Image (cartoon, rainbow, N blue to C red; front, side, top):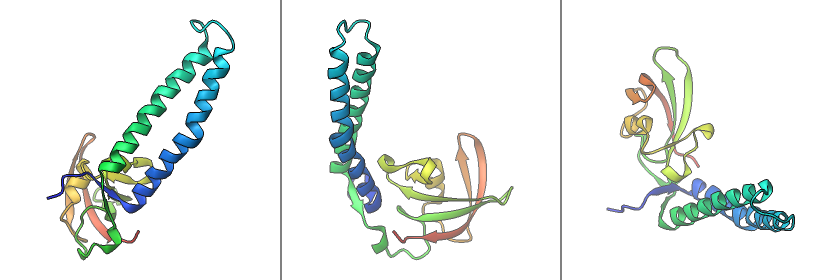
Length: 160
């Protein structure tokens, strides 16, 4: 069995683009900001210098995280999965809250590519763990940090 963390092809491409942006745009901007701040003299009380160094530290950390994550990942083409209406990694799922009827849509993705604002939830999240192996029409109980939630699975899609 493959123990590498999974990534969707779309997620891997998005992360590669972020990595290139950090290396080719953000990193040079930070280096220039540090050089400009150094030109102002005394570094002990130079807020621009300290802000640029902090931004550099954050950016370099993110670059390392992305490089390591992408190189170690198992990239999965979800359009080639043949699982019918069963929910597995990569599924785009529409859920209806049993209590309110409100619908939410999520895609189950790798931990590195998850972004709740985009509806991308980690395969390790409580919602994803409750959904894996279920099918359209099933009801699931989610043990989330905000409490118990019950959902009905409305649809499952594997298009990319």
